[in-house]
Length: 367
Length: 158
Picture 1 (cartoon, chains in turn green, cyan):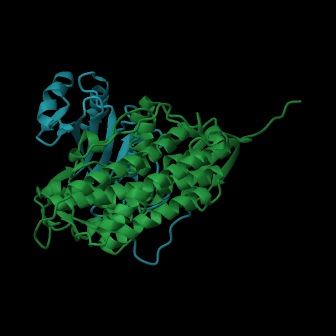
Picture 2 (picture 1 turned 90 degrees about the horizontal axis):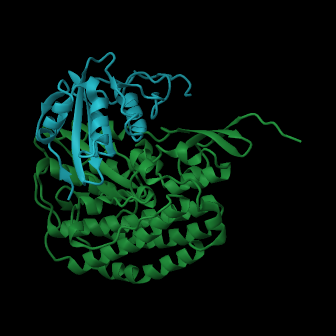
Picture 3 (picture 1 turned 60 degrees about the horizontal axis):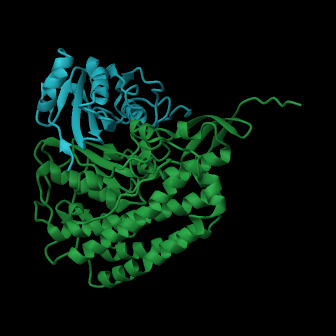
């Protein structure tokens, strides 16, 4: 007996636990098989780029916190680097080290969240997520010591950072650096060789290296496809040229590789923080500049390696105190480009997992 | 460190291949004729000496007299970057060819520029509103955009 089925349109989201925010997928299904995918976005659009045109350069830092709200530090960093390039400001040494420490801790936070939710999407309800949230809390405590905020940090400033780390920051950081390798081992022990995880994720949603480059994918998603491209190595900013670390690269570009890249990058981030702690010297944390930052007319674009991929702020200045135009090169948005290629031909349950493996943040997709 | 290829360096190469295309070459960028943008991009991507395989960023800026479309290109193998620009005039229907055929990564970025800045990319396979919704009036990132007076109602989203 043969069965005959008609394509059905299934709507997922925008409010759905697996969509990591307000993301909507319109799937055309034949039974359980995906025939077509259309991502529908914009539910969290707040017009940050337009808002920036009516604020001065320092005020815009608070807007960048609210883009990728799981990785505010790296958003701050990309923005202030672009401002500094615009005006030719050189940040102080200690400021640069504190920025890199903040950014790498933020990368660990972001990758932990990504891993936790990825497992949640696979159906491992709550346990791995709670494990990663538990470790994330400890790093957020460090951010609270640095600047008083845990999520929307606004820690970095043009020319350095907002304030020096307090005395209690360093022993707390030391404890985290000592404890974390064991935590990552514990988390990996639950996942990496888990039979269900490997069965569900290996070979699923694979993207070839050439396709990934052509689709402008960046970050762990690009490296999982076997392309060794990391902005921290290719164009070192702040003090990344003074630290050594490896760039993990996958081979097949499937969901499993994307997960594995993030776990490996957490270990590399710990190495970077360790080296920064050894190298950092006392000194001023912020270069003195005018109360109102007024760069000369011009434009700048300084890409950085954010946890999700290449993040850059394209700033156009007309010589006033507010940017004439600010454009955010948002890795979360651009990493969605190849979603259709990843999902078509797989089952509905794989769509959820593949989307989770991309680790997009809706605050950054919609801005 | 990524080599920033200047517009002046690239101008000769592009000029030789497309005699009409180059409009202005400067330290920061190479500005080409909008009609030639897709051909120039295809050349920069496919030529083995250029090899700009990654479209880092694509955006539009409203300078009131004209719109400037800005392309940040990266070559992964050469570790080099370059900035391309194209100017389109007119506020009613500014348009230039799409580069989706060259880099698929332009897809969502061109849609964003269309949605918020009102620049049409001809040849784009799915050019429609992305961050705002179907039926939204105006282009919010333009310098002359005004919010409609309250109270206002929007048509149902699609």
